[in-house]
Amino acid sequence: MNARFTTEFDALLEKFAELLTGDTSPEMVEKIKVWSIYNHIHKTMPALASHWNQNHPESKADIRALYEEVRNLNQKLKEANKQTEG
Image (cartoon, rainbow, N blue to C red; front, side):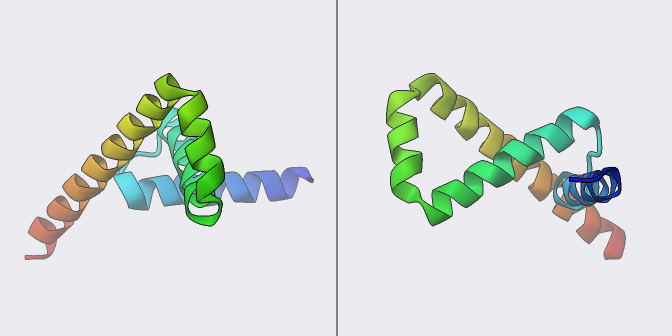
């Protein structure tokens, strides 16, 4: 991949993190990368995700915590946007 693509794709990920959680920190962008990839694997190849979960129970717990963190941040962002609009 070329540098232009990498820069543009990184900007896309940063915007996605912002719209999903309200946070564009490098740490959050990295979390959103992991969350997105795992979410895609879970939806497209559930047997693979299940197999990985069984073999890596500690990491399964980490993924669960990440899902909850993203969900909670998204809910807070939606609430804040409702209050701003209303």
